[in-house]
View (cartoon, rainbow, N blue to C red):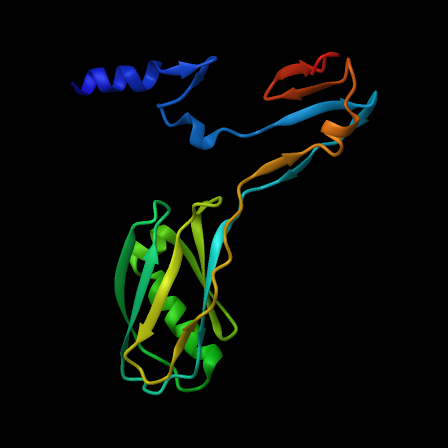
Length: 189
């Protein structure tokens, strides 16, 4: 059965593009050589970005050890909860954020989902899955009386390629090359 599933995944395609073998997740949209209104146009490429969640820390109330509970949604929307032990720093919010970020980055589950870095008094979680469906932190709490406050997450963005005035100014005979194939506008489109 496994061989048959693999055969189906490797052979299912549409117009020569494999649909089930995982290659679509790494497909790059590569637009080159666009000519619009009989003038060459340089396409603008915007890379995908990961969702960013930010937790603002106060200076630690205790430095003997605390637990930070992180609840996050993965790229599929499934909720997870992780408890991480850390030793807070009473010297100020910046030093406490660094101590928390260091402890979180050592957690295997969180570090496989997020890039975790201290940024002043904030701890930034950047989803390693880029695009609109990246992971994001949903809630955070600490056993320390000093509060950890979750800000509003910034959604990730999908990669895109923009050709300015493509629909408005394109004329019969104009062309663009997408992933190595050249497409030409005709009079009836």
